[in-house]
Picture 1 (tube, rainbow, N blue to C red):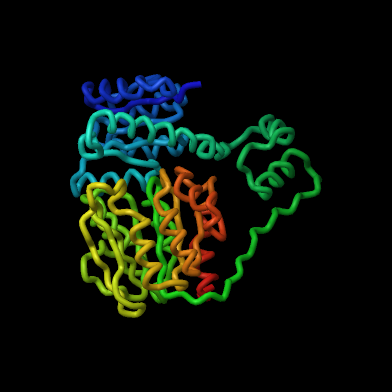
Picture 2: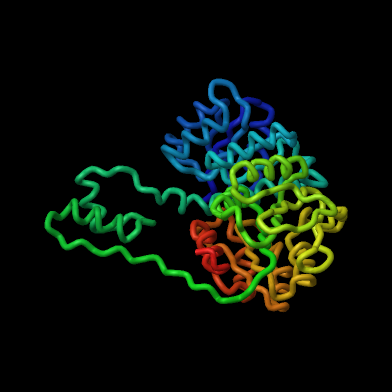
Length: 382
């Protein structure tokens, strides 16, 4: 069955262009279009699409507000189209905060060398996001007494043991409640670290925010972050994280000295490497390179970290499409460092973490909501 797509944009030309690209893939099908956010919310509830493509600036209701409304009533994977400007970056990050899963520039030539490559990228993004729909729709709406009775026979997907036991108690007065299964307690490995490194792509902005906002101001190591993101977005993203986090966050600059409690975000369109010795290592920002698929590239940063810090790196590969990070993580593991991967269910796209896990490189697969907790336990701050 084809992936059902709702296209939302106030430009008839852009709606037609996106629809033609999507419909040219037999695995995808445009089932409707909307000219503003209000129509998008109404059609989402009516048509139940698998994926929505959404513009940001529209009349009646803008895309960010529409994302929030859709996430309340019918959670659906949403791909935003954005302008590659500073204001466009801020608006796109707001849309991701609201619940959108990914974004692409409205000018396809900004993301690809030719039309065929751009077409393939859009089709692939839509197909990948569709796989997330089953997890997003697991949220359970308020049920009537009759519905509660039906749920006893067939529990809703994604319910916790605690929620299921509450439903059972309401539907069957006097029934013996089922104890919720406690979450596993983490234990520190006892390893000593000097650097934390995180690599991510699709879904990464939200994932990084969830993790970094839980770290204390006295975090004892420097942190390097590699997020696949356009050059015009990384400064705005670093500034946003800096405002939200207790630790400091900045877009990395050539020559920056790595300091504890500070996170350095690789600038878009370039590569971030580390140089020097532990305790006085510096950031080196170099040209992205024409042959490199990713700018910045997780493999490049991880590989340079392995050469300097050897077994003293705590590293993570989070949600993202492709396999960037696998070879860099392999180098870190060979040096004795620790590699964790985000688990499948909490990923927007289980590509990069899967590549690391399948290769047997990661020692733990962790849900996003518990990664910060795991970090603090590992380094002895919890």
